[in-house]
Image 1 (cartoon, helix red, strand yellow):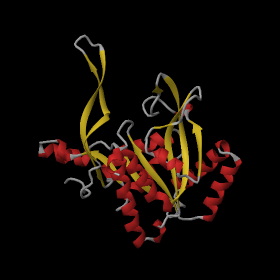
Image 2 (cartoon, rainbow, N blue to C red):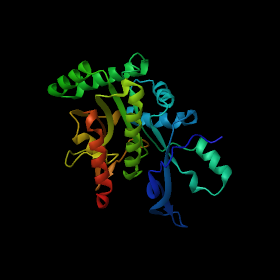
Image 3 (cartoon, helix red, strand yellow):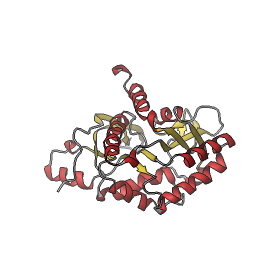
Image 4 (tube, rainbow, N blue to C red):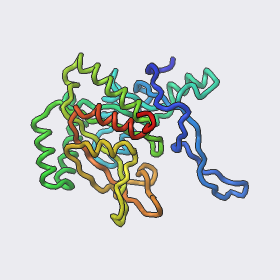
Length: 288
């Protein structure tokens, strides 16, 4: 039986998607560049068969950090009613049997969700998450940022770890529907469970910085620069020693070598809707 499908949850309709770009070769085998592949995606409820795909996406964020990502993946799947995985739409196939197989077993191209850190504060992977955050903050943040983050985590208990992760080169347009869906789901959930009345969100973004430090930081997910601009506290750290080219993000820009980093962001929960509106204006400027 096919997994449950979220109603009218299609972030992209016939989107030109470079994530599926293949190197095109001539008959002689000479590389001719990339070709665009048309694909339609939709958001779906995370289910058990999505485990490995979700874990792979979490690994893009955490790399070699000491966090039980299997346990965190289980938390995301068990959190019914909150969060979506991004999958290729069943409508891309004309074969009904292929539709069923794809919707149940298809690759996970992205996940947009939130981990309720307060509700799971005794869970080992969440304790590991906080230990990692504290370690990174002490090592990479300036004193003012350290003090601000420590204050936030001490004074506020209802904190969510917001995850907005997908394969490199899937366009930012997809994030609008995924983030709006998550926002609506959190609004519904907090009516039943007060622990979802988040006060702050923590987020980790994949970024790259030119090796010569001449140029701007590049966000792997373009829309996450808007999250960064709205953050109350943030810091960045180099992950060169932990990355490989398979999951490190963008490596070249205008013939410059880019060094992979991660940026930790903390922002007030009441800014989430404004951020989503700003992202909508960014990816759909003609509709605003």
